[in-house]
Image 1 (cartoon, rainbow, N blue to C red):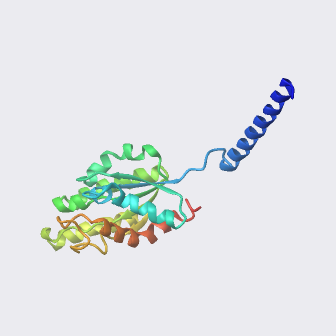
Image 2 (image 1 turned 30 degrees about the horizontal axis):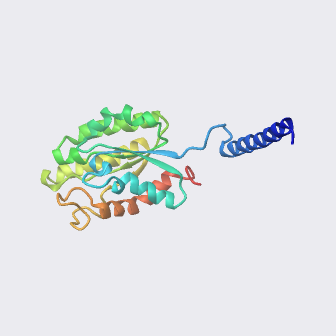
Image 3 (image 1 turned 120 degrees about the horizontal axis):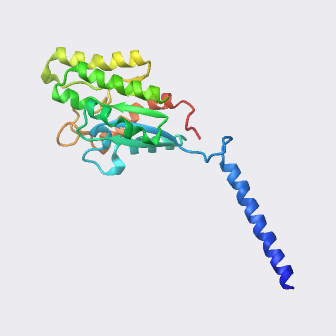
Length: 223
């Protein structure tokens, strides 16, 4: 075979490979011409979200993402939990939390407000500002509620609980009444401090909150 024929033959092979690659790329592109991306879900919270005292793979965002993917959802959950954060702290870092442009947000804040006895009106103002900003950015929201410890009295506990009810109604967002439902005060599902869930405790949280998360996602992220 002459050198020219050999070159032409190799060129045809390369051209076919390039064409095949282009077809494959088109298949992976959506109608908008961009690579399909996972649905971005922001988990905005405190140590309960961050995974205090747990290996990275045991944190709430990781376990929730795994559970959703197992049911066919193509989601990427952003762990924006900071241990020790109050509602004020979450509000202060909202710009940073929104840098990844999430489409959905799970808001879990207020536990440290309740532990510190912060005026429920202050907590409400901070959470109201967070929800207002998220909605302005077009983010779909799941608000999770929190209960205050009993040591501040029944009136404080009820005022604190009602903060979340009012906010959910005011902003017309999905609402999960108690983030720690099913594990609170259960020593088998909490770490030694009695406040933070174990890996197994997080698994219970995920199992219980999963229907609410799926309802918020709808068909978004569904493969």
